[in-house]
Length: 154
Image 1 (cartoon, rainbow, N blue to C red):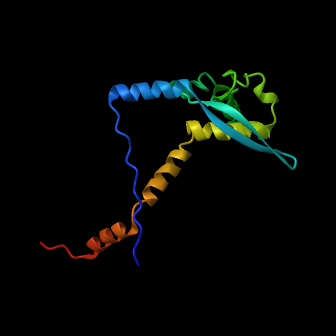
Image 2 (image 1 turned 180 degrees about the vertical axis):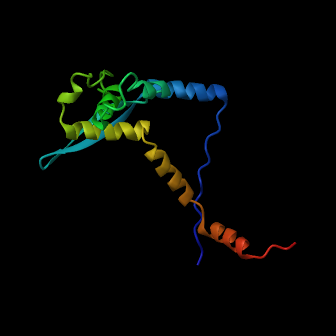
Image 3 (image 1 turned 60 degrees about the vertical axis):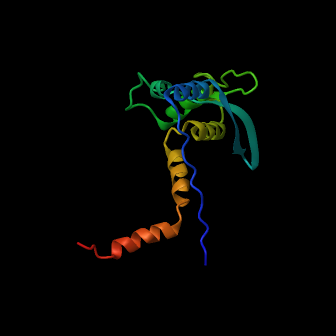
């Protein structure tokens, strides 16, 4: 029985100038996403533009707020306000005042697609790393196990 060896995709090596250019281009452009949600028994979806936040923008989302008083809902709303845009007009979809009037299902769906782009929790990075690691052939791990079982020759 032959095992199929999956090719592991190597990271793209960037020079410092290329890295800075990529970072700036990514932050300027909106990422098109579709958010789906349910109201009663009906499913709805909406196409939005997601802003990729810079490190400072993520850090500053809750700056000045008392961490003891901030709810997860407040954090979700702040992320939605900062990242969700009308993809045609490139204007923010919500303000701090209007985001609270939207349906919770919509805010949850918009937060979910924003997290897919900005990876606020690190969950998507871990998922990608797991996929990458699963590409390693089991026969190569078996070889490692065999080497561990052999007594060392001194």
